[in-house]
Length: 91
Length: 186
Image (cartoon, rainbow over all chains, first blue to last red; front, side):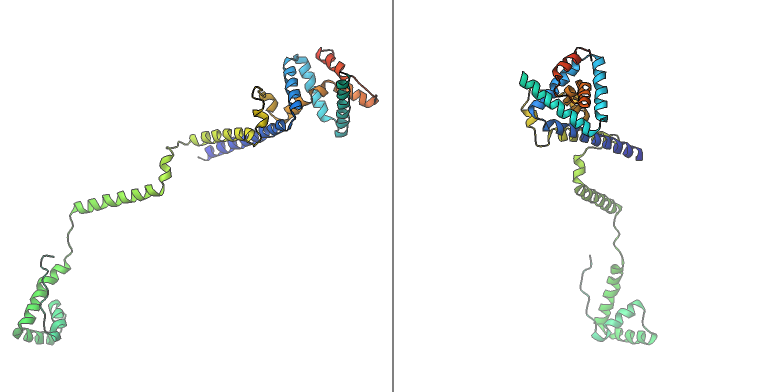
């Protein structure tokens, strides 16, 4: 009886954690603007078509990006946004 | 009671004594005195006769047949069962649960909760406004994945951006670096 209770407790906790994680991701998705959502979906579709080598490279870049200091990340992000705006203006 | 006739009245001063006389709880003198009175008093003789007739019947307990006790037991058990049923009426709504059903039921309930948390937070517009769009599970799997796909463009030109950040030049064409990345030259 104690064993069954323990299994139920572990299963329940696991599902709660999963629910929390999924809920957080769902919230973030809902908070995106329609344009951002489109970009995410577009990137996802592009990702699906990428060769394995590029996928691995992107994963490495992602890990590197996360390890960067916060101020550097902000600078790079600003620079990237500037360039995006400039590209759009040119187009 | 078969012999439910009223007691004959005795002489007032002998009434209590006659009862004691009947039970043999009087002294020898008293007994003799009552005996002498009884000899000449018909009312007290009648009263004593009634006592001799009725008192043994009063003392005798009525013998009840076994069937009475069997019925009594059956009815009591039925009444107790009825009372118990009334107290736990809701239990009849739940079918007999086996022990493995408890974690199974818990899992189903939690799954429903997960779905509820995902879609029932009041803001369904982002889902309902785009009925044709199916959000891939990989995107919503966790927060990290979503951020990854959100910043994929940036990641593609990260090396370039980083080197620019070190050199601090003005403009960079990210579009061109992205195209190079897609073609596998990065």
